[in-house]
Image 1 (cartoon, rainbow, N blue to C red):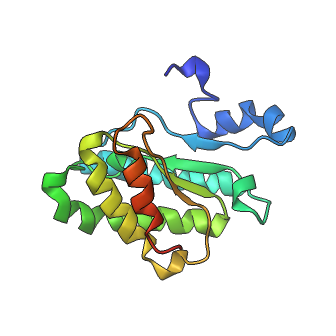
Image 2 (tube, one colour):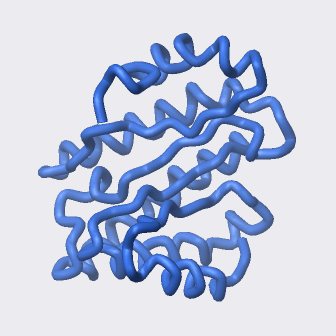
Length: 169
């Protein structure tokens, strides 16, 4: 993926560059590319960047339908430096609160919030995090939470069917 195909290097730039399309009725879900937390400081920076992006986007959330408002896509590996199954207990204790906080911020803005797909080796961990976050009563009644699935994966259909069994938020 090249920068030439993106709307911008910052949320401010992307919002400016996408204005003409938004004025025509298009909506966007914004991704931050290249994230990979290697340290706790990296993860904190990404968390703050996601929070700032949600705040910037919230100013453009004017519809009662969250699907008509801008959204954001979050990479779990950006929010935790040891996002791997061997660190599951630590990830669940440290990452779930961070993802929950961002999801609540997105819910308050009535915008879309999508958990981005990770490598196949992290699929189970991603599903565990998503399932726990979705159990929060504070997210009940909000239709803006989503998860990206790698459609080319042999597990894609099973993942989608499994997710359909989760209680609706």
